Length: 264
Image (tube, rainbow, N blue to C red; front, side, top):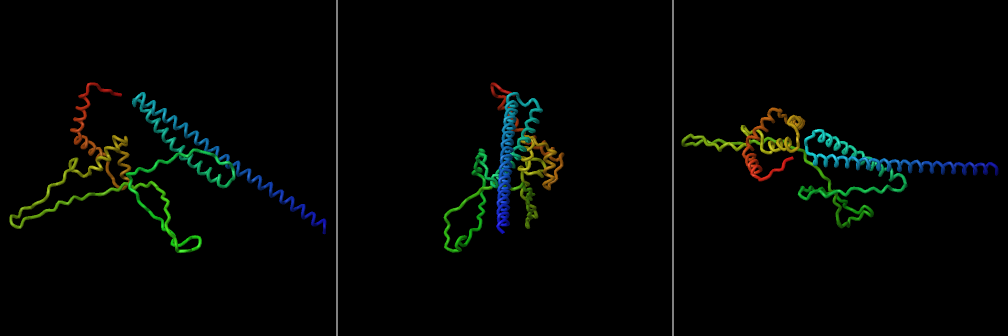
């Protein structure tokens, strides 16, 4: 009986030692995995910094030597796209590193997190109040008093909405002379004015301010449910150019009236 008890004790000791070794091995594996994730985050951050520096160098060179080479513009666009992809991968690595750090008790990687700028003050604020509890979550008492609040701001956007403005001009007839009276038609920036001034301004800004070709604009409008042909957009751009010609002439006269002009 004593031999059996001693064997059982030896087996229990061996089992405890095996469990300790397995636990130590698991802890070392988790720690190594966390360190690997942190290294990946460091590498992503380094690549992000390299891409940013290359993009800044390309922009500075373009500012120094002018806009003559179209290849430089395409190179800058490619670098910006690669930089966007790297920033996305970097954020994923950071989130994965945080998740692994929460599971493993390893030394945390100290990284400098960028401070987010506050949202512009001119943006409207929509206040959404989460329903507060009516009783204490601890003891269930209904004698609770508000002592403050925490506000979390989230930036949102309202998708562009299209609308049709119906300008109604009512007709009236005189019972005495039978003459028909009607208010005059509203003013339109372009002939036959089917496009409003806001739409025309958006098309012109997208084409000349954002360098967005009219065919891409037409494709985007069609995806939003409003089909406008390319020729129609081109006609409106031409009509706007004629309407804005007086302003162009005034600017041209003002610029050419200077004693010295600097051109790039």
